[in-house]
Length: 194
Length: 278
Image 1 (cartoon, one colour):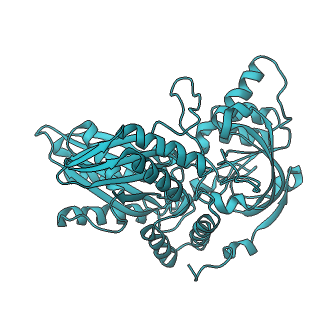
Image 2 (cartoon, rainbow over the protein chains, first blue to last red; image 1 turned 90 degrees about the vertical axis):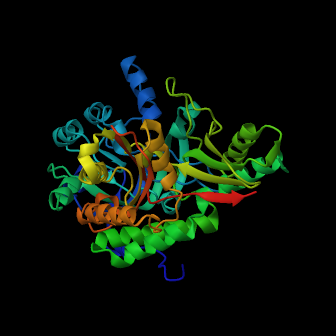
């Protein structure tokens, strides 16, 4: 593996973005942009969403205020002693599609995972001026190095599906859906030969 | 009769579970390197580079290549002249439990109805073949479910022929788009029955990546399907380019005269497996 560089060349081209987003930055991001995230975000996946929705349905307060935040779809592997977190790459996002519009209506500004989103989620993003990011599936070891702090916030019994607050530094991602309604995956797919 | 103690089976499985999660095999690293070198898209080339760097970090620092350390799928070839001392199946399950615990691997197995995590990553899915001789061969394939979820099976009429098979496989992989973490490895089981085709598709993933089928006509079919998938242009992580798939493996079994089952098991680029002879 001696021919490997320490990081891909595209790290020099990433647009630096601070979390949580401010609306001005969010509106400048476009589908296909490569960005590098620094700041705080929340995590959640299948069971996390189910548990959040139980609270919402009971009229209870959520353990975190999602307004203006980024929700990262990840179920990390356990941290070895002395480490912040284990592998922490994205999980496939479509499983959260059924939950996403309601969270965007509550003020969530961005979600991050991998793979395509439903029509309903894309419409809800347009309505709420929200965006969707993809990060790099199967790069969980690399991405764990971009997480400098991980704090358990809620649902400890859910194990890897608990809700964490991550502090990230130079965490790479690609903008898939932007506030203008563009979808980068669809643009690639419609340029393809089939 | 050769005796093998169940404790040595547990230990072998424990070791393999831990190593599989962090150390990609040389064939998969080689395939990723080749893909990087022939990649047509700058962005996809960068992502392939990132995946190679990721594999390097994982191996050096013992961080799993991917946080989805999978359901442990275990394939066993058990020689009929081997006598196992102790409980064979329990020994494998115990090895999986210990490996996932000691290796700081994610426990991803839950009750399908309550969704309550078993907390141990067991039960593993175990397939045993009884074979001639006195050897015991164990393979472990920790299977992530981002890719597993994109798999499919169809019962084609024989009249669909090879064109029908190709269309089904290509369409399934292309439609999966970025979801299963391409570049994917496509495992295909053709023939047999409903369950046999699915098992063959999974088993085909154990073949060294890039090694064509021993049957020339099947090897040609593998190549043709691979070219069609990669010609589609969705590419690495759906970000474009000519590397949607690293390889297509097809395994066959004779089918009923009325039937042409085709199963497709999609595997992500983080293709992890280990094997051992005991």
